[in-house]
Image (cartoon, rainbow over the protein chains, first blue to last red):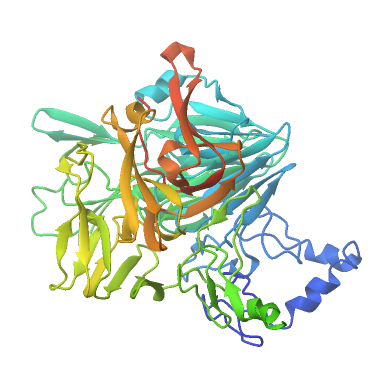
Length: 339
Length: 274
């Protein structure tokens, strides 16, 4: 008997895996799996079709061990914190995602690799520094981007590279973290903070927009403008066919869905993605101190305030926000609380 | 007459290093690979390096090595009298006071520097304990080195090697410009002579290996290269990426051609393309 999570051999009859602690599938699943081939098109299957992946919403086959859209392990779905953050469900090493005639296998746990098997006619595009390896005869070419000069100015990746099937090509980032699979359903869009994009399938439309979230600091005669969530954000939209978007996040990943008008304060550099209806702006908090007459600008907390409706995803490890503690000269629209 | 037939059934062969283990063993005595876990091989043919369980003990010569921790693993060596290991000094984590350190005499008189410091190989001689780790999340890779094998390793990726293994280094000409601004890139070369030895590497992120057939080739991000059999050739190829208006960018990929093993790390060392 092998553990469904880590693959190690466990003692027959044990309830938990001795290596990773996961609950070992007890007598229940084997009969279910055995019964699967026969009644697959039968009515009972239809009722199970209501089940959807807690992370990406892909309809689930009740007999499968993982979600075909994002690779999440069935037993780890729907794990939420008491405050309502849904954790990115765990994924078994070597989990396989299906899109069109092509597939993507996610390999490794510290710095996972996205290994694509592209069918003829299918393609992916990526920022060119994330390519790990490819078949020697798989062709890659640049993708023309409109308005590329804006991107150059902002110091973002200027060149998107495209690879077309048939063949194998694999991607990873140069930092530990999670690989997030975001299936893009027809008509759906997702806004992603810059530099988190790894790879997307050719049927996902790529665009970007200005965030409009900034503040400027002054140090002597020097003024500097800072963009807490980047000057630009990437927007990925679905077309007629479902697409797949892969992002790389540092640390662990959590998502929550905000109701219309519901707000949340998040660390700006922790934001991974949001649904387009979610609005965002700066928010300052000033703790109560005896010295409110001076230094009030440096004695503050800087937040990103997100307003629903829609999803917001954050990562547990984040970069330092430059200029956070400096004297602030101006800023984009912000709300403020003085305690 | 019947005894040779039953003999193989009493032993369990490690699929990573091919050494034989007792049937009841949970981890390979020689390389630490778990023996009760299936191999993880991707559909594209990469085999994940075995994930060595916390506190697994590995045996070499008369000494042992215990692998501790999982995210940034430590290799703790308990050297017997007469055994020795060599390493680069920046990977040392701690040691017993009494373990003597000497410098290995490197032949050829090459000028090689590491981050502005002279490149030195240190030797620790038993008896005593000494432990090693590297500065990033990753995996320890215990390479199966049998007599007669030659392995080339990305520079600074080797953690330690037992004294039975012969060490040298080779300069890679093609990679010089893109990787280190003309200073040259070296590969460490390990050759096993008479008896098998222990070679431990540290790969950033996750480590994968594949065996290339004669003439078969694969394109790698140069920063992902970790190790190869010396029979595998490495050639850098440049690919011009369009965007003519800005002059475009050049992408460099390493073409690895078989026969032999190739090991890669998923958290590659990032190099600027400029």
